[in-house]
Length: 208
Image (cartoon, rainbow, N blue to C red; front, side, top):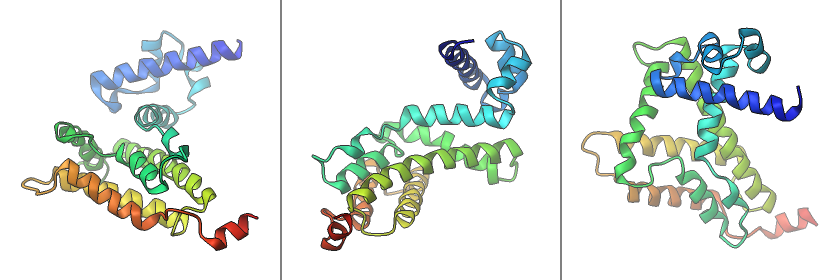
């Protein structure tokens, strides 16, 4: 099988998995079910995804990768704080009408740490968190290489993810005074404390 054929078959498997997610949630995505939907044997399926965990990871990555566009972070025409804020804002609802989409995000946490938590729920939350952290780390790496971070990159990543999660939770809280524009504004304020507008003299000296 050529590399192109292998890539095409892998995408066929992922497409089948996405269809099953749409119909029955991630719990419906088993190796056997996806193999049957994709029209391939279980042994072929395991060539691409040896375990169900690997399959779930690929599905979660596909969803988040489609949602998160990091190209803006390299646009030097925009101030570093503005770039990072725009990238992180993709993890928040874009407008008030999209707040309802956070229900799925909250249910993911409930399935992992709530009273009816399951191993699958825990794995999905872990995988989703890992993928989100990888994206945010990549964005912070770009700014760190520019000398634009005002704090250690690990601190920047941890603070950014914590703030995004907190804002999402506040937006879901009944009776909250926080709306989406205010959430985006607060995100910008926090990012402003993590990023400086230009490299320091010390950073420039280290580069040279």
